[in-house]
Length: 68
Image (cartoon, rainbow, N blue to C red):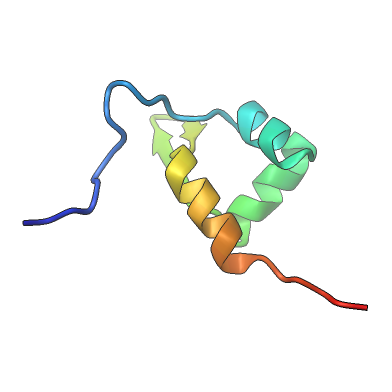
């Protein structure tokens, strides 16, 4: 049985660029730079959208913890 989720369920909603920027605490321009750098995203026509689970997983996978 395939447990991967091809797309969000109806009860979930895709995030907009603005919502991702709020979640990350950054600017919309920075979110677009992150997309160019590999942040998972999808296009619905010309609309850029994000699966919240994929964004969170990407953040955990790519984080760098520095110690002093």
